[in-house]
Image 1 (cartoon, rainbow, N blue to C red):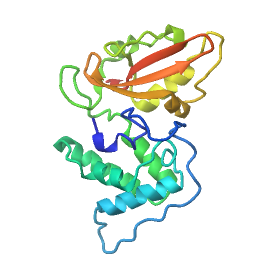
Image 2 (cartoon, one colour; image 1 turned 45 degrees about the vertical axis):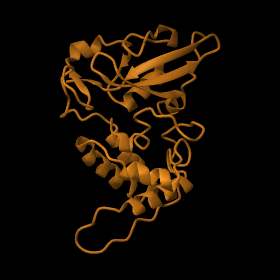
Image 3 (cartoon, rainbow, N blue to C red; image 1 turned 60 degrees about the vertical axis):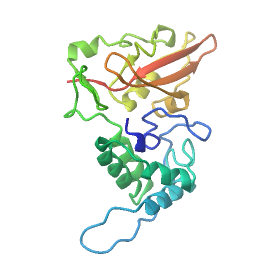
Amino acid sequence: MRTTACLFVLAACGGASTAPKTATNATPSATPIQPVATTGAATPPPTIEQVCDRVDELQHAQCGAFGRTLTLTPLQCNQMFTDKIPQEEVAFRAKTEVCIMKPECQQVSDCLADLSKPDPTDLRECSAAGDNAVGVSAAAYAQRNGSAARKFTDVKSTKADPIERCGIENANAWLATLTCSDGSHPITDGPSAESYRAGNVGKAGRCNSIIDDYRVTCADSTTEIFIDAYVCPK
């Protein structure tokens, strides 16, 4: 599942971070990130060294998740971009590299956020294998698990039967609408939901997609919420 970019794209794969969790979409740093100088009419693809140097710059500038929920050593970064990956992920990794090399923090954040959104023109059938989102009818999407939940205590989910949403951003926004029994909102907005993500539990659900695991504590209870963020209405 997009293994190369999973730590970068809004923690899209739900992997555990190596620093204390904060909102992944934190306000980008005002510190400009200088672009890599290139010459000629066409810009050549960046080298692994350039990409990892840029990651280090982003971490020092605390751009979005970089240096906050995401910290990588040069060796870890190099391994991430040189590890052998399935052929279908090669193009996605290249897009991730392009995002990282954007000259301004906001451009980097926006570009990576766009990569996390399901492509409405590339939805698979539930029975088909793949990592792209599943397309279901509008009627089926309206009846998906979790559609009627208003409080955390309303949420009933398991790895095998997760809440279904269309995209990580959509899932986080939905979590922010839920309240504790006393009416409080521990998740104040979509970006802050990232601090409640425990990680992912692998592929499951009715369409065998990556399932994210969130754990939300209220005054009277802790709710574990499993979310399949790869189910979208056609």
